[in-house]
Every structure is written in structure tokens, then in C-alpha cells.
Length: 96
Image: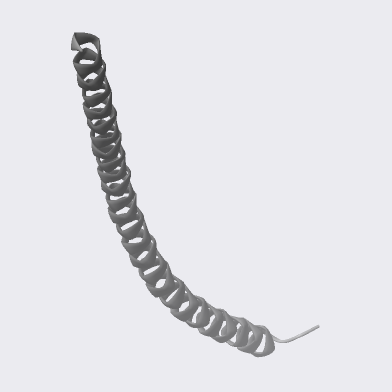
């Protein structure tokens, strides 16, 4: 049977190992917290960039729709002018 001194030495050794393990776990925890903060910042930055790009895309789509409308409007105006000219030609021919 181990003596009280031997038992006490084992308890002290186990306590020292637990303290070392606790210290190592605390360091690992600190590193993980730092990594978590870094990743959170990167995620936030990525979300902000995504929102900016979505806004730019929305603006580009809107600008394209306006330019297409302007082109269509110009095409329609040109066709109307052509029709008016044809009508004028027909009127001149009818007067003869």
C-alpha cells in the first residue's frame, strides 16, 4: 500500500499535469478566439462587398433597361417619321 507521501506526490503530479493541460487549453482557446474574430471580420467584409456588388448590378440593370428603352423609342420615332414621309408622298401622288 502506497504511503501518504507517495499518494501526496501523485496528487501533486496530477495537479501539475492538470494545470499544464489547462494552460495549453487556455492558449488554444485564445488562438481559436482570435481566429474566430478574423473569420468574422472576413465574413462581414465579404457580405459588405457582396451588397456593394449587388447594388452595382442593380444599377447596371436599370441603366441597361433605360438605354434599351431609349433605343426602342428612337427606333419607334424613326419608323413614325418614315411612315409620315410615306403618307406625305401618297398625299402628293393623290393630289396629282
